[in-house]
Length: 513
Picture 1 (tube, rainbow, N blue to C red):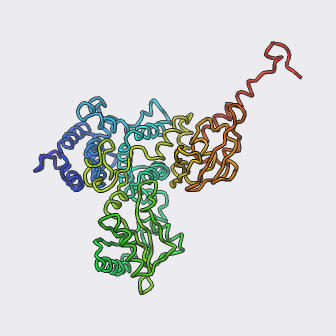
Picture 2 (picture 1 turned 30 degrees about the horizontal axis):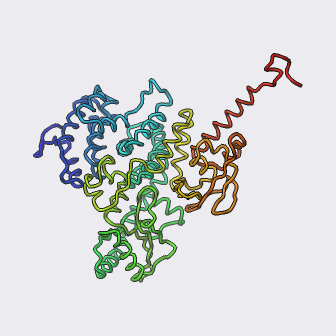
């Protein structure tokens, strides 16, 4: 297992190194070699439930990250990610031998002991991991790849344990992959969870895809015609048929009451430069009949998880309708790998290889939703509240931007469905207890009013001590920060009322009345 290759690497990680060099041609490989040597020695003799040597797991996890374009530090930490948890290797050794960054990442994904935390170990481990991700989002990248490989090999577990792990994957890990824009991981996890939790529907979708695969794909001639059209217009592009994954097939079938021959995939057009996206779109809409209702521009207005593409649908001369995605090569890398494609958040973009060379770099270290999460999790009073609020928060996978009416006070990023109550707590913290109303787009509204993307809001606060939150606010609050703060204040108010005494009782006399 540890024989050297021509590059001086063990044969067991030669394929990993090749995947890494495809994205980072000049990356040094010595740290990978040393990390594998430490991990292989530490895990030697340990076996997985499948009967495979344990070292196959960190190697597989690291390969997933390498294929997505992760930089070297992430790969080194990935190879070592279970050593502190499952072997005699200490965190101090990792820091000494591989540096503080690798040590931080390994610590971030190391589970908390069930002996110490009991039933709360899982939720508190996620809390620890998310707090660590607030300083370095690569912690979550390693966790997502770890879950992909564990889900791939979940068949050796008892059915009830498979279901429990699949539920957590669906409610937390898939949502995190969506938030981080790691589409390749999200879709694979969705299909793996789909197979465990809905085996009959999974089998039906598999059967539909298999039957469709026996026939010529009607999207192929449309793809060829689109390719010819773009070439004649002088637009350099690759055009391919992108099959839907199984859960997407199932959802489309349910939504449409069945699938037509063109519904099993979409056309993906990848152009060289961002500006070429609109040139390609213009040719599409000129040479084919566009389905106007299907057009969405996520290039001018990217999704909050960094995703950018033009979405459209066109009809060819034979009446076949094809859904189309148009994006540049840079957009495609980010669409597939999300924050992983952005590289090391602690180094300038130009040091992160091809993934960051041709674009203004967004900072993946603290996306807006993660900042909000870090703020409210510190106020969650117990693991159960944190776990419930985390799952609810992650389900809200769209964001809106709300502008403050007062000049110079900036904007608020809130989840879709947020109300003026949520805006008040996001802007003012516990001072929002004194909020008595709001002015929305110049008009007075109640605090329960739902906000929309682009709204301008002014929050009206009463003098200190003259107003307090109502229990009804909980019905319109959707953000954990608002709900936790309101519940805490309502509980404190009940406690103050319960312990209040009349003047007579305080003086030792009989109760009044």
